[in-house]
Image 1 (cartoon, rainbow, N blue to C red):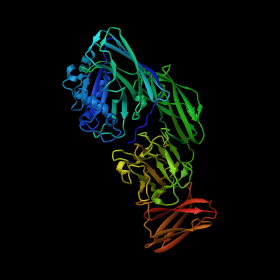
Image 2 (cartoon, rainbow, N blue to C red; image 1 turned 135 degrees about the vertical axis):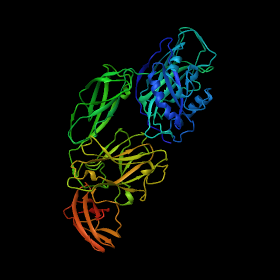
Image 3 (cartoon, rainbow, N blue to C red; image 1 turned 30 degrees about the vertical axis):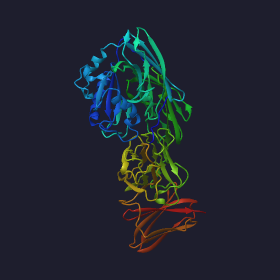
Image 4 (spheres, rainbow, N blue to C red; image 1 turned 90 degrees about the horizontal axis):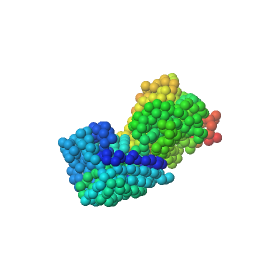
Length: 639
């Protein structure tokens, strides 16, 4: 099964040294993604542990109690060998969840009423932390240039004479401080996980062997090379927890965790991607993931590859908090632009973890408002089409693309849009496809119509599609369409990359009547990626009609001839009942170039378009009946 993308960085930082005899306790929780009581206990437990962060460090082991999650990207599945050993084989004897251990001992040894994690108290934490430690630990780590391996240098010093029956081991566990899933990996509904154990080095079972006898001042220094596993979700959330443990008694004698005093994380552009003015004011989000409050930052903006003037921010950003920084306005031209920012200084000095300081982004400037109707079949090779824009939010390899060999319902000429979820490992990626900025003035009964195709790779891997509408140039958005999982799917589960057949499409009609007559209507289509399977789109149109109930007319026949046409083209409609029809002729720019009304009799009726003054190319004929049903026929003009 596919694996999530590593978001890696480059850093070299020091880890705080522990005072000579002060103990930092270790709390290990055994919790489960399918465990209902765990989901209800963990929020309160997090509050308790956060309030006592100066006394105790948590590691969360995601066990298979009461059962194992089935999804391959669950926290249990990615680290089950270590978890099973720690919970069941090491001697903790975990039989229920959520269960807790303090410094390798039962919670009850420190005054808790039981070993259930919900029974943890501040008094139990203080009782454990009050026991003097015979060791101090200091650690340093540095990433390699490739940002895949980091080296941890560990220095352990005996604060007093110490002897144990052993074995005595130093264990190093990589955790992610926070992991957010869009959909719960298990059945208990939990989506947010904290201090989750991801990988131990060199192994959890053996750790690094230490002498069983120490004299005061004795020191041992060593290095551990750690290759970050591919399933790490967010590199900037990684910490290393080290602890000394007597395997004879399972007593943890000292623990420590990596920290970065000054660490600003650039979360990227949060202002609107779409701008209706050549003067654009970007804004970025910044999170303080260090220990110290941030009072100043220097941020370098880069527009289209050209560095701007460094921007000095001043304020107060508490540890763990996030703020929005409004950057200086930029003046630019119509079209697509790149915009990146780099935090070059924090609190008037260097950032302790510079790998998360830079973020690339983009925005689009469009001053054109296109009169509806707008019709797009993606039959031309240019993509995005004129006045359409795509926002590749994570600047990743995979984004919306046009596939020339595919078309909805197998019609010709071909051309459809694919959002590649099959190859995109960035779970939660939300790229955007913007339609032309539309003018609905004088129009009623507005609809968005499009064809969609999607197959799930697994019933538990949920992809989705949202359609958003803005009337203020993207400042705020309303959701007018949202389908996920089986509701979005048009085909059965596919365990290979999905390319739809002619019968694996569904036509969607979204009522936009609330926007009738409005001069500025902006529509975007936004998929949600879970590294599952592809989402396909075709025939995306903004049209005016009355109560559309189907996108296909039930005529006996609709013929367009000659095709290709030169000076004129005739549309023949054959129907047993007759009726009134409107025929609209659009060029590939989505512009209506002609309109005809037809009062058809039973049998065959025809109407002719004059094409002698039209440019060569591909056109679309949209036929609408009185009931509002529509169909589209292709017409090629060749002079």
